Amino acid sequence: MPRKIQIAVIGDSQPSAEVAGWAEEVGRLIAQHDAVVVCGGLGGVMAAAARGAAQNNGTSVGILPTYEATTAAPGISIAIPSGLGHARNMLVAASGDAVIALPGATGTLSEIALALTLGKTVIAIRAWSHIHGVSVVQTPQEAVQQALRAAKE
Image 1 (cartoon, rainbow, N blue to C red):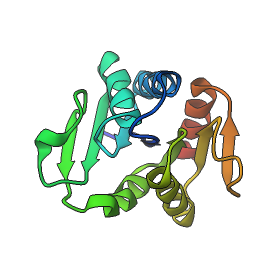
Image 2: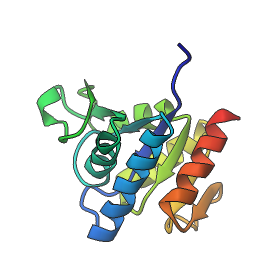
Image 3: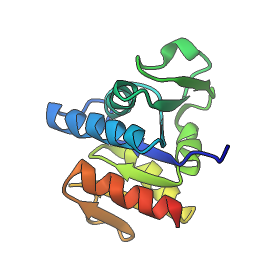
């Protein structure tokens, strides 16, 4: 069986309802394409993306900052307790064949920087336009299409 495409989904731990909706749609679309959502495994954008994947019987991997699998958000299929705190951001960035970034704060910014350093394609939904190397799109559909295309290349 070939390895499934893995798309890292990053963003705010306390997003607006609109951004959480985008993240859920991203998760749904990733699952519809039989790809895997990779995220930090906690709340906000991470939980919304996992929830969206679960709604389509998809898989989500949460790379947790703690040593406790029980800290994973509902909807996370596979919890990886890293115990690394914010350093787990490197694992999230490295695990995605491409990265979809939603609006967020410094944690999201660090994951974007790490992903770009690793040569990953980073697609942002209506955010991060000031960062060289980030492709900005307007919809979750555009983000997932670009991420899947980049992952296959």
